[in-house]
Amino acid sequence: TPRSIEYDVFAKITSKLREAADGGPKAFPQLAAALYENRRLWTELAFDLAEPGNQLPDALRAQLLSLAQFTINHTDAVLKNKAEASVLIDLNIAIMRGLKGQGDAP
Image (cartoon, rainbow, N blue to C red):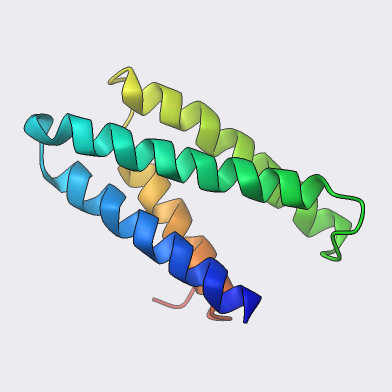
């Protein structure tokens, strides 16, 4: 289903982010690559959300667009070594839970 495909894409990218973030300073090239993929995912998501035919409720679309903007800004901060990637990982995990219909369940 489209939801399971979205979940799989988030899971793959989140795994790369987590592995690179856990690798320390030597893993910065891998982190930068994972951040790029994550930003690309969120950018594509934002384009989809902005489409007139998107059937999500307006309030949810607005919230997800806000999260997309946050992700793009936070990615820049991580790349400048002014923020941690863990926030992006947590955000992706929360989205994955929503895609699985788990809400805030662990």
